[in-house]
Image (tube, rainbow, N blue to C red; front, side):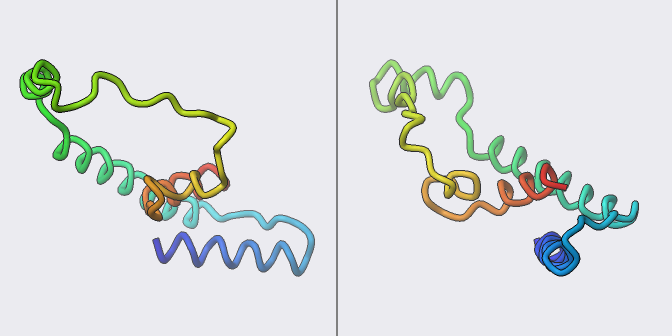
Amino acid sequence: MGFSLAAAALITLLLLQTGTLVDLSGSILTLLGISGIGATIARGTDSQRNSLSAENRAWLLRLGWIPVAKAVVDPSTATWQGFFSTDGVFDLYRYQSLSLIWW
């Protein structure tokens, strides 16, 4: 994350000083890609570890202990904070994913 923040800060600084976007070298893009891929894999592993098996989920649904479906999200209540947070808490994985998309 530190590398992504440093790269974003330097590119923004150069953009503000010169008024033009700088070309990113292949090595910088490779390092950002490694960071993003690592974050994606970590996120997938974490969600897989924290999810219920199909049998346990079906059992809990039958007992009524978990809701059948998630609540409908109202797009009119969306905020910019949602890009970088999950349930109101800063999410490192979302930040890294968005920083890769921005480059």
